[in-house]
Image 1 (cartoon, rainbow, N blue to C red):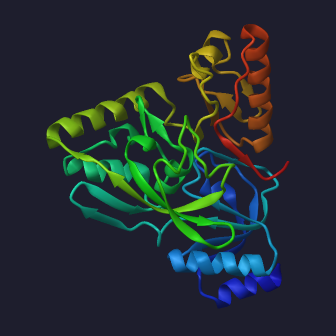
Image 2: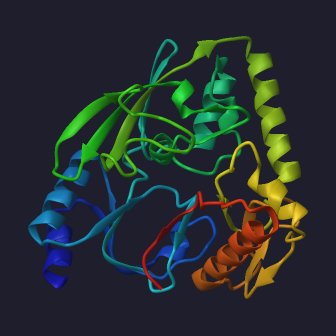
Length: 302
């Protein structure tokens, strides 16, 4: 890996760090070191990074702002590529918005709402990046990215890029074609919003922010919703009815505010969270004969 590290540094692709703790880059503040950590300075640097990684036959993983992500205590072998600064451009052409994958989703919702653009109010309080939101069809308040995405610029593992339309993304609940069927990295997205009265848009944005603040944990690190809702049931309600709010293993605790959140109550390890997830799944299956699946993405190996 030394030769790969040297090559990446020499190529001046951006920030390159050896053995970077991924706990610094996840919202739940958990995760061992990345063997090599890269934050590319632009799209071309990202492409160059992937070319070098492939030349060295190394594994890689792309992350955004680290929400909806649980990294193992052992960390990640190979290269972890973070899309952040350098992939956070924003362009507006009327109500058509082109935005980089590294742009904060919360910030984007706020910026656009202040200009009277409606359609992204649901994202108030979702602590992820645009790229991650496109990848997993992030949503809340009965809306999601599939309602506003026109097309997404995708970089595939073989180095080719392509613009995929909304239809080609094959969106469904918290799912897109990029997750399994056709793995790829979102570089940028084109969104179509609608013009509305700024006061009305901001009122909805505030209402959604207030709802998240009042019903979801904000004073502890967390990864967002842990489980997919097994519709027509809701994971948080099932956990609460099972009497599991506040249940704790090690430093990982089911939030007292919302049953579908596991918080880092202090010094939590990935293993604590994984053990708690398995305990919850077992209890829900035994009590209600319902199988719940994780929404949070679990990477690395313990």
